Length: 132
Image (cartoon, rainbow, N blue to C red; front, side, top):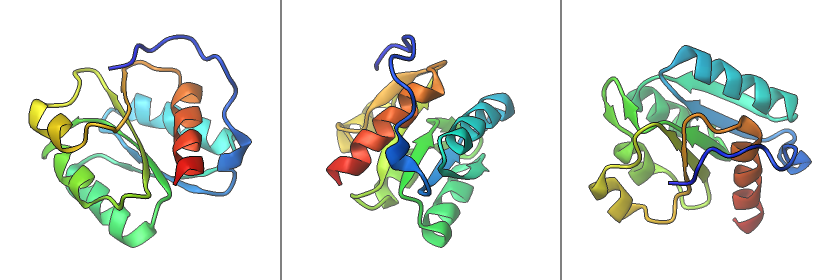
């Protein structure tokens, strides 16, 4: 898991207009992420507070990227990651890290410790979008 660290760059303008899904059950964290995404010019979807809601957004809203928490009221984010298309840029934002079985299935998904500055998460999403 990557440390929270200070923001070393402003959110990338390359995310302007794209849909970014927030999967977070903590309202204050979700609000901060949504505000940062909107300030960067992107479209904030959610927040999805459960795995079921996250999967629903995935299928019905076609996000280009997602910032996701791991432990939600109805389980861990593994089912969402399993269903996510390969081209979806995802960043994990968690206080506990990924369960070993989820990490084994998704070893390349970047994982950041809470609290991480939203600008860092957005920058990483933008990098993932450029690679897709």
